[in-house]
Length: 122
Image (cartoon, rainbow, N blue to C red; front, side, top):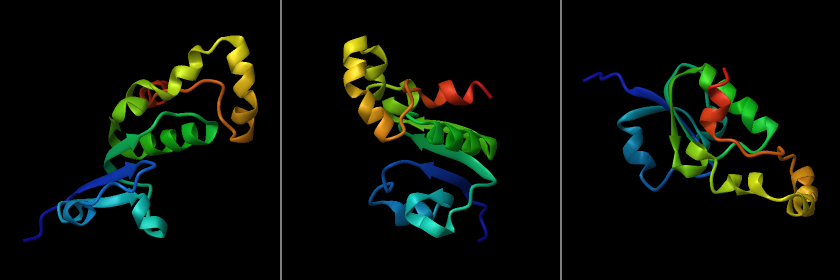
């Protein structure tokens, strides 16, 4: 039986979970961290994105993902609302100044954004 599988991309800091082998029987993973060099960023039916957008490089990556995906699904509160990672967006000036060296060291944006904030602007 040759059943067409849904083509998905899983974009996360996680390695999916212990059920990868079971899921692979049901869906075609076009992009997932565990695939490493075999990842393909094209022709994705559904992209699942986890995590808030905290840098320009992450913003560019999410825009690329959106461009090649029919649908995007956010996973977790960080990707969906930007919180709790985005709590630093509400820091007062003194607190913001005290963490600025970390933002600079790790090339972080001034503000944390959710995935919808980034892709709705397209």
